[in-house]
Amino acid sequence: MEEISLYRKYRPHNFDNLVGQDHVKITLMNAFKSGHVSHAYLFTGPRGTGKTSTARLLAKALNCQNLKDSFEPCGECEFCKEIGEGRLIDLIEIDAASNRGIDEVRDLKEKINFAPTRSKVKVYIIDEVHMMTKEAFNALLKTLEEPPAHAYFILATTEAHKIPETIISRCQRFDFKRITTKALMTRLSYISQLEGITADDRALEAISKYVNGGLRDAIGLLEQLTLDNKLDLERVQELLGISGLSLLENMYEALMKNQTKGALSIINELHIQGSDFRQFSHEFVDLLRNKMLEAVVAEDRRSLARLIKMIEVLQKAQQRLDADIPQLALEIAVIELTNNLEEFQPVKVEQKVAEVEKVVAVAVTVPQERPHQAIVKTTTVENVPNVPIDLTMANILQNWPRVVERIKTPSLRNSLKNGKPVSLDGAELTLQFATNFHKDKVFESGHRVELEGVIQEIFKHAVKVTALVKTVEIKSVVEDEVEVQPVIADSSSVEDALEMFGGKVVE
Ligand SMILES: [Zn+2]
Image 1 (cartoon, rainbow, N blue to C red):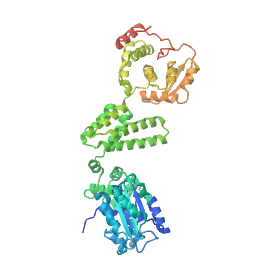
Image 2 (image 1 turned 30 degrees about the vertical axis):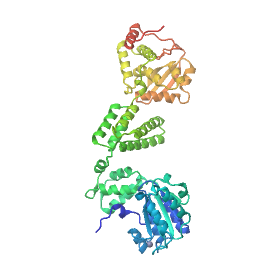
Image 3 (image 1 turned 60 degrees about the vertical axis):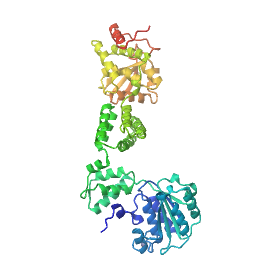
């Protein structure tokens, strides 16, 4: 017995079996029922979504001798059978990719006016029609303008934008959609059952996601990857170069926790495994997209902003994936996402002065018995961005300058410099201000969200900020050059700090 591929075996034999293209199915069905079948159709859409199969179904329906319900080919009459076996002489399939359609269209023009040999109508299916030459298109156009009553055309293409407008306007156009993962899985599962294949659902899912909406590819892979009537996930992942879920999840974790080294080691692992970086980043963006949609449902605006940023950076990286050093673009992307790169810019003199002032201020607020240690700690934290810090009042005071520095809204930053953290109750942080003006600034729309976002970024802990006004002397932990007089720490701390940064006090 001749061995036929699963795809040919499970290609739709009637409209009822056509997967994932309901809009096409319904419109064609109605055309048959009302007797208004067009003489020229243009089927566009990604590969493997059923364009050619639908064209053959249409040819069957036009020729069938016992149409069911006025549209469904019977599958049993001689014409249905001959079309099914690819040997009906009045169904002419032209592959425009083969020699750009020149000879075929010439031949078509010569013969089109002859009546069909045996069947009711002649059907021309021109596949990859966008490959035709300009001359071939012109010749075809003349025919499409006045087709003989016995002739029908179905043009199929993956690239509709390459087809002249004059041709498109002569055709009824159908856009074939990518078939959803769920619909693909259902179909693969159905075929597996009939073929006696024991298939892991996760393997079917992996194939369905991999093929990007193409049923032909999905069935082809099902056939190729099945071994001894079994389809298991590991084999599918290995042969398709798909990353296991754990690597994707690990990458997600590493990025969310700003772990540069962790993220880079995952990329290295992928490289050693010989994985396809394009495929990995595609899957990863898909994972981020799901997380993004979850965040929308949960109204988690903070995660949402971060996820959108991650997707943008990774999409940029995808465009730059290069063949020589395939992992480079991805490495740059994860470094960018796990670091606040502004912190790596060359330090300017003004910044040095600001650093000195911060260290001085911190020295004031940390317990006085260990001022030197406090300074060392502060600078360590400053130099290693995004290390999670325990949420304690002492750490908040110590890192408050970092918080203020990261605030992007100038008026909020300025108001924060006029206040200070005074207490921490669980995750509720109270700030104290000398005036209502500055307190109110912090609670203006969006400001508190921004502040809480920055605190979470540094402490990896959600914090609710409240504030009070106390009209006594406020010792700000961040000194403002213009408005506030610096609170001078004991002189040894200042000297230590100056020595460390190589600055000097400007009076
Ligand atoms: Zn039939």
